[in-house]
Length: 174
Image (cartoon, rainbow, N blue to C red; front, side, top):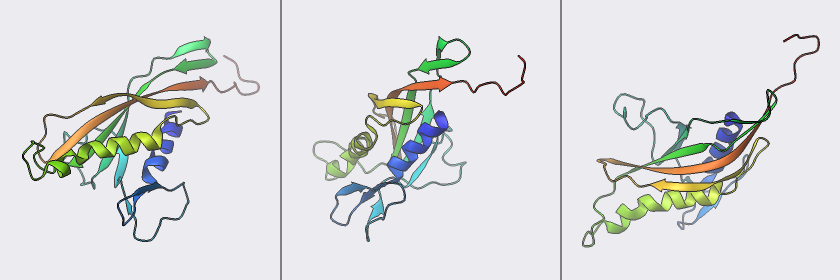
């Protein structure tokens, strides 16, 4: 289930492109990217405290999104067979700091662009559903107010996960 959800997030976010005129479009998996378009999110990966160890890791392009699966508490619908959960998924949206956002700053508009990307992400992911999950939607936004050269905002999503245990093999004993 997590693998399916992670791949769907990667496909949706990896398919966001900015055209030369500044507009953003989404390309379905395997679709054609318009000539001259550039990827909106340049790196997507699983979260591994990437921002904490930025100097020690391989460099990654920004903007980047890191997917963190929070602990999942399963509720048994049928003990040993069928489960449901409503886990939280944190998307760590990492961008470069573009300067002061103060009212008199010449860089205010560029500095506030850190809020544009989470809105694009929400548009791409809202109500995402797959075989084992549904109702993927935004429940919380955490704005970073303690940053230096990069800004990490966290967008918290929640969904309904369904898990069915595989059937025991023929002839297997418990």
